[in-house]
Image 1 (tube, rainbow, N blue to C red):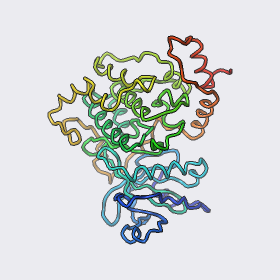
Image 2 (cartoon, one colour):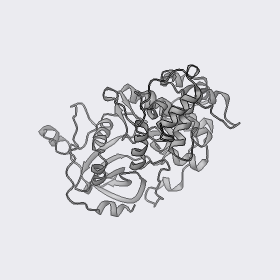
Image 3 (cartoon, rainbow, N blue to C red):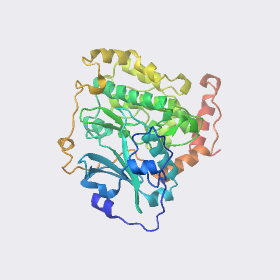
Length: 390
């Protein structure tokens, strides 16, 4: 999508979303409070608008509701990623609460491995999030370019992702959509977790069907109660995809992918994957969430510890030992760049179809497989996915 068009589109009669969310006086990262009634806040905080930013004519990515472009703040000259979402689409698919929750969550996050939210605002056409710019692009793009990563590189990215997820869990936040597309890299190759559109707070956790199919945990597909172990499952899928070059559960369509996830089948590995790496992946990808390790359990696994010992610099957040292979275009944001579109974006209609199939059948707490007939279990799976009728 042309960034000039993004700045000039017009849609009439779009009402305000009233994006300002509750804020603590200790929140220091909130640089914009649209519609705030606080005199103290309005006197100290400069409210930003679209006119404060200059488009750099570079599209960084596209999603279901909008696009991400590179912009420069005119006053400071600093580069940011501007995520713009069309209000018409937000109202159409009733995702306004998701957006407000995304803003609320990101405003209180401050961690070196998590993308920072600088400000947010809206006009008659779009809602804008001004985010920290990660020059290195997505981890997804890197994996696709190299086909697969070495175990040393995979360790580097998994370690930093674990640090970011551990922080989120301590803040009582579940990301619910960890995948390479949502893991960005800065100029030094450090991980920056982004896209909190599906995130939720543990205190407000409800049953939901969201995320990306290849990375969905079994309990999500079964519409069972979920918790932070959803993110743990994603870390196992992530490590597998990094070292193998593709996700562990594949299929021709979403139904086949879901069936593969629920099948409990033994994972297949290429010969170049070490036994310790396989051990960690298998330890994480446990169908029963209660059997999955904690973040500390992952960090203490022998594969992680052995890779850590190989690092001459133990400050992994600033490690320069990892080879970061980037396009020359990434070094100069002024140059034009091909739009990066995720290959795993599920559109709204597909999500609704999957969700309906999931909720057509109520899963009860499954019995151990050895106490439940294999044929009955798979029949229930097929029914739940809409593959066969009752």
